[in-house]
Image 1: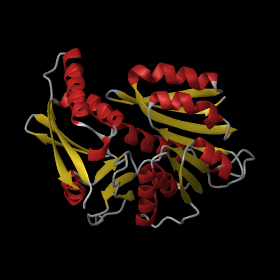
Image 2 (image 1 turned 180 degrees about the vertical axis):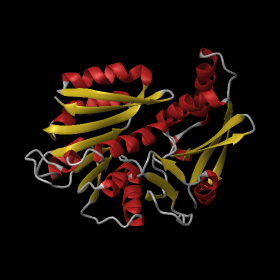
Image 3 (image 1 turned 90 degrees about the vertical axis):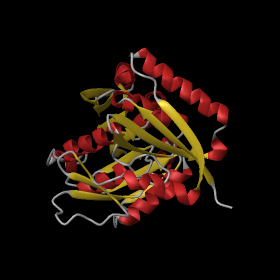
Length: 306
């Protein structure tokens, strides 16, 4: 018997896009797609039926309405229904097209042909049920931050002893593996990609193969920072962490233990209103925030060990 999924259809004003995605991420949705319907935004989201009851969906609908009322916008309309696994796997793919991000990246859905002109670094991606398609502001900010880090030549390729060696990076909460793949394409020597969700780890393995990346360059692991600490033989040169603000704050002491004095960090999944709390936690754990990049309601903190 095929697995079944809830398909959520949310019709809303475009200005609610970020708050809707934030709610869906917290709610545990496994995949999202967005398109414009005239002047309205249609967001489709998917999650396993065993994970959610009807009362949970009703509560989500209420929270979405409350979010809209708080900023004086019309309440979104939420409908849901059950679909089979094969319907889910093809439904949202119809709405996802190649997308340029930053100055160097192109995210290309794995089921579409590669563009004729390859003047960008192409990330072929099939996120499966994992977070990270490249269309969310936090993922884009992280990829653009990686571009910035790897444009700092020769510093980006220097270790603490000033030897030209490719960087070792930890991707905490790797999701689909998109950031790890991006880092390898930019020149990273090795990325440890960890996630507590076994489906995300499976997705990262799949996307590693799609992009012809060597197994010893991108290493997916189920778990969290403690798993990185167990497997590395030296501190990492960089950390990428695109999760949620409260989880970043909770994990910062552990993340700091796998760093060296020159390590840099890219932290996102943070709402603008949460940025001060995360910045304060970074400072308390021996980091200095160099820049804050924002996109709509979301931000990304670029930091270095102090």
